[in-house]
Image (cartoon, rainbow, N blue to C red; front, side, top):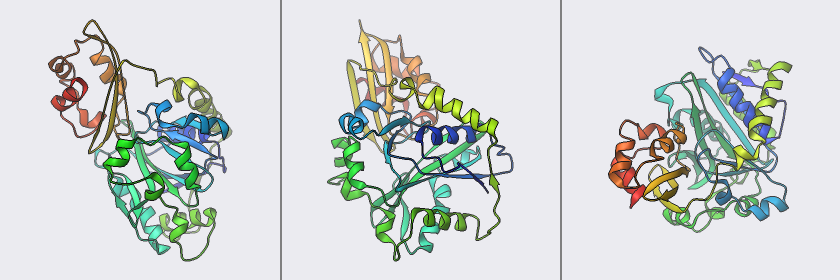
Length: 331
């Protein structure tokens, strides 16, 4: 394992660009990497989500909160300087896809060393006493992948509640009353007070098995320039962060075991003229590929099913068969 040095940057656009640069450029043939970063107040939107509906726009503007879309799936999360983010960058492996147990194990081990009874709960969360302290998501290509997550250490929970628009059906489906009641800061469970920097050092110590002289990857000036270019051309643009959230005249929303799908469909004269798929599912494929298959097709269940007959929906969205997916879009 090699620690990637992010130079203590707290700009969410730069840190997400660094995450992407690492997964696309680092040599992962026989090496694994770990990246830690802390962001100043920001909302990080899942790749497939509709930004406008996930955020409290008025609160975001009033409090100068950055809104940035990431390249991994999952739901929207609030970051501030009390939240520590981690990213494991490894070689692509089919066995590692959706294997959050593998990537959260070192983090859970470190939490146990602090007498915090953390477990992997649900599909991708780390919880303590039933309350969420970490959410995780993944991104992969044919060569490499990352599994990254949040760690609520001393975050302002009230800001999490204010900044995000949490759908009523998501709350009801989990049998909970509010976001505030189901999330927690790790600091609440510690027996002694430590800083977030000390907490990060505990994680590093556990990941590197106590070795003091662990390897560190320092980006060159040229490599940092490449990261800045990714941030400028992608993560700092309206097109990436908001432009994937247009209005459509038909909306289909349902929550499945693997997450929520939100479909916006524009139908004219019985033909699908445009379709966009959003959600907090943890798929790896590009929704554009499914959307293009359906555009121009008749808006009927069998036509939809036939259009995606050779697509593996498990890779793109989750464990749903083509008939049920077509039924969801049409009925």
